[in-house]
Every structure is written in structure tokens, then in C-alpha cells.
Image 1: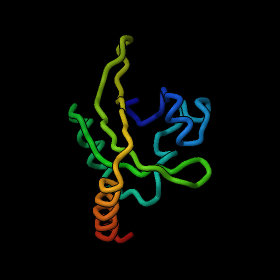
Image 2: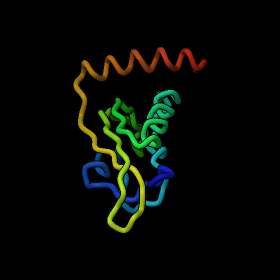
Image 3: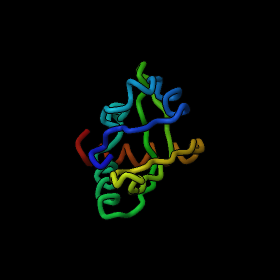
Length: 115
């Protein structure tokens, strides 16, 4: 939703993140945020979608058991049929090369952030 609360998750997301649907729905999406993700990436995401624009980028998420997985995410604002506004994220598995590039960029950003 507009505050980052998970309102829906498909079976693939549940399986990869290692959470049940009941554990995800109603909780903030940052429950799967990996500690390696620079705050600059999420500032870019929120600034973009709150302007009504589509954001794309690479995201490293944490699993319930402490693992991680990478996605290439496309996040865009939408309004549901009942008038509720929020954001929808569609994801795909990035290539090894895309992950390597994202890791290098995020390491640089984390260094700039003093992390």
C-alpha cells in the first residue's frame, strides 16, 4: 500500500522469501530488506513512485532463515477498483552479470553512506 505494507503476495514470493502469506500480509515490506541494501536505493524508489512514476532497480532481499535473493523490480503506483491507492511490484530474476553490477554499485553507495 502507500505506506509499504504488504497487502498481497503470490506463491512464488512466499516460497522464495520463505514466509507464508499470513506472515507477509499486513507487515511492512521492509521485513525482507537485506542489510546490504543502501538507503539511497530505497530513497530513489519512494521518491519516484510518490511522484506517480515507475521505478526499476535491483533489490537484495533477505529470507526468513537469513539467506538472501536478488530481484530486478519494477514498482509502479496503482489504484485498485475500490479506490485504494498503493504500489505494485513485479519482479524477475536478474542475471549473474546484473547482480555483480548491482553489488558493485551498492557497495560504493554503502561506502558513501559510511556503512
